[in-house]
Amino acid sequence: MPKLCIGVLSLLLLVTPAYAVDVFKVSQYGGGHQIWFEGEAFDARDPDSENKASIGYKLADAETGINPPDGAFGDVMVNVAGNDRIWLRYDFDISKCDGKGGRWYLWCRMINPNNRSEWLWVLGDDGDEIPDGKPAFIDGDDRVFEATIGPPWGWACSHSEGDVKDLQDGENTMMIWFREGDTTGLRDVLVWCDNATYRPSDDDYTNAGEIKIKLSVGPAGKLTATWGMIKGE
Image 1: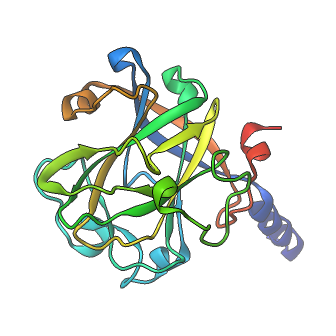
Image 2: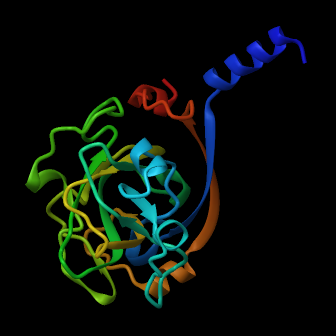
């Protein structure tokens, strides 16, 4: 292939948005709406987690040799060791479960015997541009996974801290940032729901309908999307 063509192709690869195709589950239990996804189904993570074996958010079984305890839905996420640079990003579309923008609640199926928590940042609620550095978080507003659970697996949501956020119609982006996680905290399944009284169960997740969603997540490795870009404005 001529060098000019190779150069043009390389440029196109840099500026053409990458797309993530992920499997989600959706349901409408308890008169509300739920969208479920497994912890390992992240759309992006920081370079430290990608490139350093000794630090970051990892697939427990596939990347660390930590075997998820019985009852896990596939692999799980674990924070091997943290710093202010590590994060996970998830993109999801609440219209696929017929949900609308407004107050939503994030539950996590986890084992967390030492009560290791993280930070949660949501595009639109916490800012209009995806951050390229750790935001200024507040304990009472942004902390998640603040619960002592298991083993065995259990579901948790405080209904008063970072797991309560205002989601937007259609596509949303969330980021989990390091706070104090370690290898004792295993994250299996996440579910957003718009009903404050709903309590998820393993059977609810198993029986929820499965869909595939294709979302534009921007050029690979570039965290420069804004809320207007996500909304297509």
